Length: 127
Image: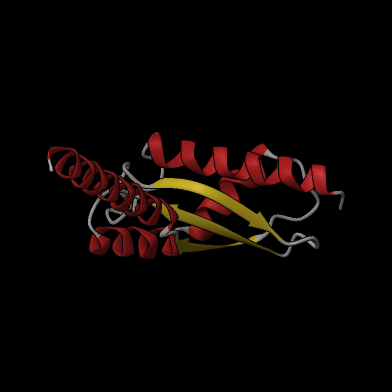
């Protein structure tokens, strides 16, 4: 499958899964509407799709939410199959994506370093 087409399919899956979660159609109580689908990676043969999930909730709530999504994967696949017309619907595997939290921590560290540098510069100017 062409790379451009595969990327469009990844985006469509991300949007469809996000909408199912937002509308509350996934009835598993572990699935929170604060879960965010960051990206989807579908294999070239359309057999599997890794769905990366993140949230700003606690790590425990994220793990519980991902477990709920994995339990509801069959339902989500069936819903997507009804909306998208492709020859094969990939098997969904939901994974925890630490990228957002890691990026947020990195920005905090950079801001802290910048504050320390300004303190050092201002103390040097006073001397």
